[in-house]
Image 1 (cartoon, rainbow over the protein chains, first blue to last red):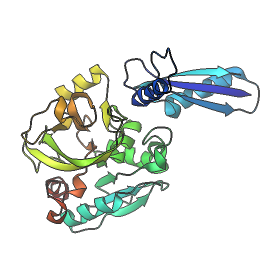
Image 2: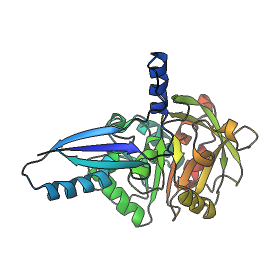
Image 3: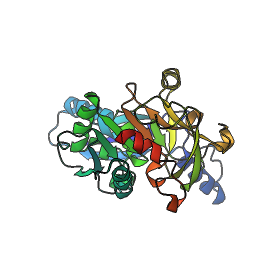
Image 4: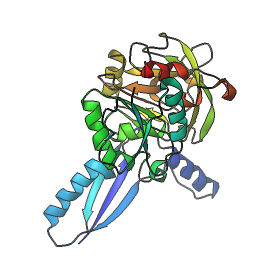
Length: 79
Length: 227
């Protein structure tokens, strides 16, 4: 079973990398970009097909390592 | 004083820390590998040095904070033992939950490597009693992610309980935006835990212990710990 975890900065947290990317997009004349926030994607594979168990495991993984919940949110998607 | 410096893959200031400790205490610290499960028996002070542990993968300090030795460091802190985290060591302590807050990328997106004035905010601790409150000192800073962030509630607790150790300031001691190199909330350069036995700071006191390299403002910190 495959799962995807998306970690994003909470709103209000300064994202210098996102700002730099936003500036680069504008310098490429890619129009209409209002703002960019950079995040992270983790694709994780599991043995077995127990979706509830995988979701629970990934919640723990996010809380303990994948996200710093002071400044980041996470979303779990089982694919 | 018996001290230990933890060596993570990617640490690069462990020798500077060891040199400052040996100069102050007359005794070389143990160098402890990150994968070791225990600190040497009788360790009084653990230093987490600067560097780029695990190449700053995931988040700066995140992987190192979950290494085996950090469980021993947490137990040491729980027993009241002293822990000093410098630069990457500060980032590791925040990631390990031994200090509040988090170090984000510098607001100006630049790696900073320069001398920086700091104001001593609390001189009543085992780490800072060699200074006087409000004293302005000059340490080196060298970091890309030193932008200290914590929620408003946490910041109020830190301020109210004297847990802010150092703030970025100018040569006259003025703390304002112009003197803030990296965007840290309230110019915070270093914080204590609530029991004042754990200190983390971004600047490098261990690099200012020899007049040959530009100053000795870091000496009182190590001298106080060695006493």
